[in-house]
Length: 309
Image 1 (cartoon, one colour):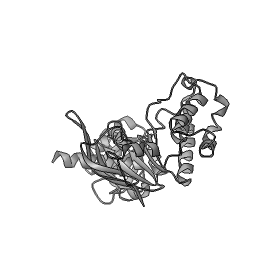
Image 2 (image 1 turned 90 degrees about the vertical axis):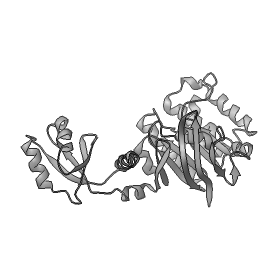
Image 3 (image 1 turned 120 degrees about the vertical axis):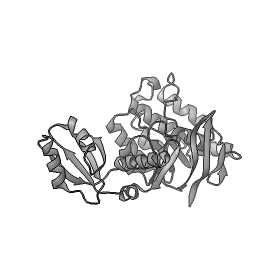
């Protein structure tokens, strides 16, 4: 069953096109991710989904409610967590939660079962001002406030940006538990590693969707074998590889370079000889499985090439 249907959505600010003719659908009880860097159009799209902005063209329906005609009904049935912490910093944890429950005509007690697993982690600080909480605690409080009215759809705009890795891991575990409880979740993130935690992802760049697939489906479409390459002089290694006659792409990934060749099969011996002639030592060339980030970069390069033609 489709819960969200978006067809040919475009949105511009003056002469700047933020969203360019995109279409997608989200299934009921799905954890759906929009993956892309800053400026990809994720926040604009989420403001369209939450009825805070109107599209210039196209249609969006949420549970068969139109975002233009039925915006009041939609607002009652969604929970929205914007990218920037937007709760009242001079109210306590408990006061913020009570405030948002009251706005939606409910109480903490009525829907406590839904937020219990999250709230117990911040309950010891319930009398602390929200502005005095750590990044991870602010994140958990904002999620509780978005859930307190038992929404059918949860919209989270880059909820883990600026949060430590442990809190990020805990947060995604919470999202998966919420999905399993029957809530449809749409989340955006610039972190490519978080894409693998979604049921499906839409890879976005410059206001366009480059691909929609399951995380494994994205990876399976990586066009060529990928290799991790190292040498004792990593600074010069990339420049040498870029100038190699069979090089198609080379990118820095942590302590390695990720490399694809123009040929269907890389001749490791020829490449090793080429690097040795350039006085490289400690050369390591090994095949690896691509990550979502590798796929994203490949799609960006492909789209840039297409746009340039």
